[in-house]
Image (cartoon, rainbow over the protein chains, first blue to last red):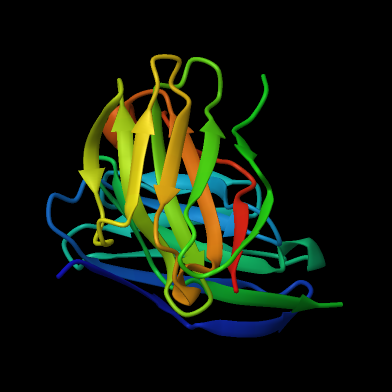
Length: 109
Length: 117
């Protein structure tokens, strides 16, 4: 059975800290790994990863995929209160997305 | 460019009733996917449509069905509602199915919050 597991389930950090979120996956017909940010509304797209070892960056966020070990990490540096959200990873099997349970990140001032 | 729109935004039904939710994708997007989000199960894939055809289906009972029209708008229907169907139903659109283009992404609508009493 396909599964996507995220860890930790939640964490609380202070502004300025760096956080690392983990996502492991076991899926058939894997094509890409996606990261989304969800505040009190619909998920918004962050990254799509298709190749191992190639880091994607967007401002203070970065992500990398390891297709051999079947995991991905999302890093957020110099966290701000606006980074507080649930971060979701999802595996894409040619249009069928399997989501992890998400990591709730709370950034305190 | 307008985003994905979903109607209605909120809905209250009673057990045994049926419900139809609507999704209008971003202009030019032809693939529409539906998801159910609950606190206990998280985000779960329901089905995906492209060119009026269902291409992928998740592990939901037959009470959950959908369709797509020629203008790419999509509807999903849930018959014989159960209390456990209370959830946020999200639809997402992309230009092509399977996110085949590495630069393609799947954009989510605001969701329809369904409450079953």
